[in-house]
Image (cartoon, rainbow, N blue to C red; front, side):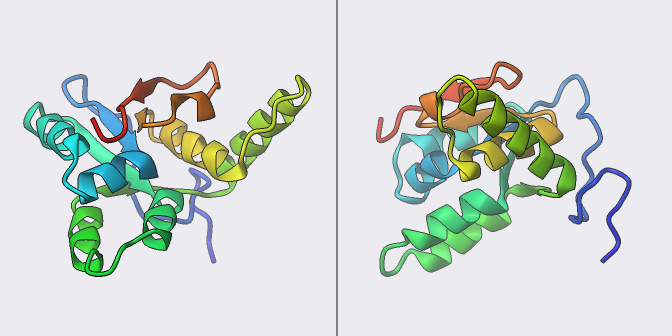
Length: 150
């Protein structure tokens, strides 16, 4: 497989969004809430109305698919089809590993999946929306707390 110059195997444009459009990468906590008709769905619709771009990544899709309840697959497919998918390639893997090493040096264990999600957000210059902001203590990302189930 050929890796494009941006270091990602995904065929997704990742140029910087215009000044009027912001990118927001939604993690699995937000996607699950939206899927189940909780307030994150309203926030996602508001995000679209204001012209911002909702994104996700393969890690978050995997996490929601693992926890699907009977009868949710069709709705989950519609939800995912309505989002752009941030690439996860070598550069994102390197960034995730750097964060894990940096925090491990301070005695803090970060989960690989969380670091890859954060790296995906960084790679597309997006804010990260999550119900678990403490999972993303990195200084160089902007984390939005979307409370779960509220």
